Amino acid sequence: MKQRSKTPSVSCRQWRRPMAALAMVAFSSSAPAWSQESPQADQTPVAQQAPVALAQAESADAGLKEAAASDALALKALQTRIEELEARAADQETVTVEDTGGEATSFKPSLSMYGFMTLSLTRSWVQANNAMNNIVHEEASFTFSNVNLFFQSRMTQSLSALVELYFTFAPHGNETFNPYQRQDTTVTETSTLRQRVLGGVAIERAQATWQRYDAFGLTVGRFITPYGVWNVEHSPTIYLPMVLPLSMVPSPLLPTAQTGLMVHGRFFPHTGTYIDYAITAANNRSDVEASLDFNDNKALGLRVQLCNETLKFSLSLGGNGYKGHVDIRKKTDQIDLSVPTIRITSSSVDKHTELSGSFDVVLKVFGARLQAEYTRSILKYDVHPLRMAPFYNVPVTGDGYVPDHTRWAGYVMLAYEIPLKKLLDDTTLTPWAMLERSEFEDSNPDYDANDFRAGLTFKPSSYWVIKVEGATMWAPESKSIKSNIYFAGAQAAVSF
Image (tube, one colour):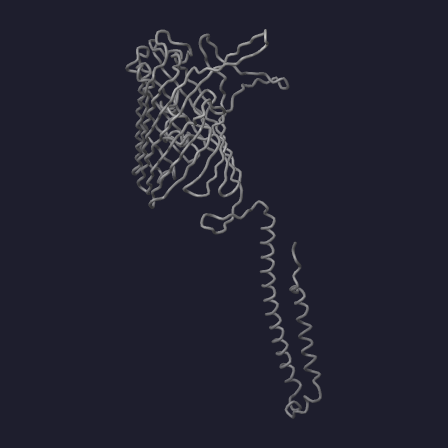
């Protein structure tokens, strides 16, 4: 509550000034008798005494004006201070916290929403003698994908939360074989009779993070696995090509996201140099690993990254290690009506240990960029699963079970960012080329594949990019994929 100031207002001072001047004139004209005993006072004419009295009145009025001005300044300062206190009291959300140095700082909780989305136009070409014929969609199609929304909340200076949702039209249009069917999720609204295509929502991540110190932080929930370059920078407005590398599709060599906890931090050993680390403990990979685990031994991971950044040069070196225990189970029920009892038995259909490692490097020099990633995984089985035909999801005759094997994938990308600041402010044009190699099972060469891609990425601003890309993929050791598959596309990606 405001307190009323005891300082008189300026308006009161204004009507006191003429009264004070009149009082001075009256005092000088009605002097007491003892002041007239001076012979000099008797000899001074009245005409000469008037200016003296007027000067004295003006001097007193000037003093009053100066005092009034001083009081006005004091009143203004007091009013400003009161307004500041009122504003601070009105802002109930503002809290005071202490940083690591022990100094008090002001922080205001916030909730923000942002995201990205893409619109692509693609066309593929597959020859008739290729086993991928009629599996890869060839006709030119517009595809609306990567509709990701982020909700970020900062509750305190050290506590935050992040949710990333991925909206998709899937499973609408998905194809399955044996028997073949294409899913159609079109429904008709009963109230409006309008047809709608129902889609799905995937939780990319939902995590809470406590980070009071640079060197130590804790994240719990569903988080992105901090490995490589592509998986961390998964916004289409950041990475250059249109599609993911072979190491991430269709079966990622490392989990792209995990449910568990992660300890992470950053050290600054030198100016322009920092070291990031992350230690993860999460559910092992399975068909329901986002919410359940069938092993008491958690999957463990380690990430270490060294970065050095200057105005003209930057280098990033990163490495990952991951060990998981996969156990995919099925349950059967046995009903005995004579007792009656129902017995549920559980058995593993795929049980193995995976040991994976990856290495990544990004080098930037005067606009040139060299980026490379290599991932390798060793799988040791306790229960060997049946070998399934890709896309058809049926057992392959003659091959039996999947043996212990090693798989790996890697790529090298070269790019050059052409600066157009002199012509178009911060606009950039980046030509790039990328060569990939993957072996998803070293005992079966039919899974080996090579891929070459090249394109242009035009970035008018940091909010949106336009991409043009061409690619070809071939499998030189495969007996069924006997010819190249060609791909061309264009994409517009927007961040908001």
